[in-house]
Image (cartoon, rainbow, N blue to C red):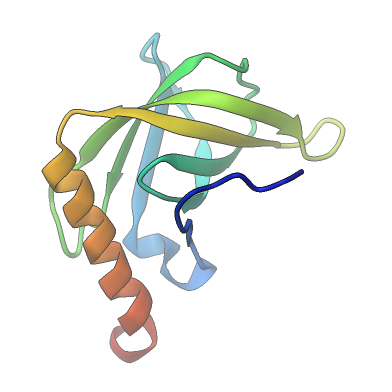
Length: 123
């Protein structure tokens, strides 16, 4: 698959996943178990036991609770959902289509960059 991204994706190394919290729910409001792999200002990649329909909307919250107590909400649109292995998890990509607070979202990206640069020094 050709990567058509226009901006860098921020990978979530295992060592600091505990410092970034990610929550996802279907628009129906039902919470969904999901793990964030990477993100940018335009999209996210996640892994979940749940299957999503391409084109369907999702609502997400992301935060760095040790740095920012505010959860930043954003809405995504599912671009792909591929079964990782038969009967297993799904690899999912979503385009970020709306964030209710662009300033906080950009601030989160900056905090993430700081954590990424300093994770070995601080944690």
